[in-house]
Amino acid sequence: MIPLTVKFSNDLPVRHVLNVSGGKDSSALALLMAGRVKGLEQFRHDGMEYVFCDTQKELPETYEYLARLEAELGKKIIRLNAKAGFDHWHKVFGGYLPSPQNRWCTKMLKLKPFEAHVGNDNVVSYVGLRADEDRVGYISKKPNIKTRYPLKEAGIDYDGVVRILEDSGLGLPTFMKWGRTNSGCTFCFFQAPYEWVKLLETYPEYFEEAMKYETIDPNDPNKRFTWMEGAPLSSLLDRKERDRVLSAGIREAAPKSDGKLLSVFSGKSTTPTEACLMCQK
Ligand code: SF4
Image: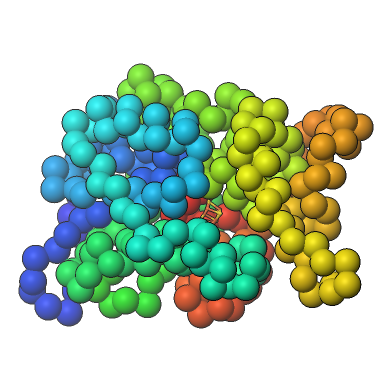
């Protein structure tokens, strides 16, 4: 086991918790920590708790992939649910959809259940940030939660993640086959327009559900809540627009966040980089 380099202010026992999202990076990290990566067995940690924060708005492939990961790990992934779901918070936030500037979904549906699960225990939280990424991972103000980035520590980059998943037999998450790049809620606002079109083609029922959350009040410009910036999802029902989006491909920008979950707590937004680690990787 890699030595514990983080320090706590007391000598109480330390829990080791890895939050898997159903995506490729956190899954590769789980395999690394389970000692399933040849040549890097020193990362094995048998006392690891694997958890998954279920927003109940996840893609079916996410559940299927988690079940296969669980089988690979030979250990249960604990499912954590927020006390109140997306619809409750959507109402509380006055119909305001989550966005990179106000990512209430991550805070209420991912971070809060995670923090409730760990309580006041000393916890090392293992985050799937790769060696080729420079954004900041899970940052909690709670002094009892310390973070480690073993993929970074082991120098594992994107290709390394793919190799780990292929060598294990798990492979890449199946949603990547039809066009979704990352795990997350079916209607996550971090999707590129291309991914929305792919969602429409693959799961028209989820696309329709996402459309129902949008609000456009022609008499009040402040009441315009759409998942994509500048256009409602209904714009993608038009065949020509869909073809345009598909030919632009995944490169047509998806929204960016500041990558610092600290801002989720503080309400601050800083320089844009990428999506959050708890639900996107
Ligand atoms: S996947 Fe997207 S919509 Fe879901 S909690 Fe994460 S940021 Fe929010």
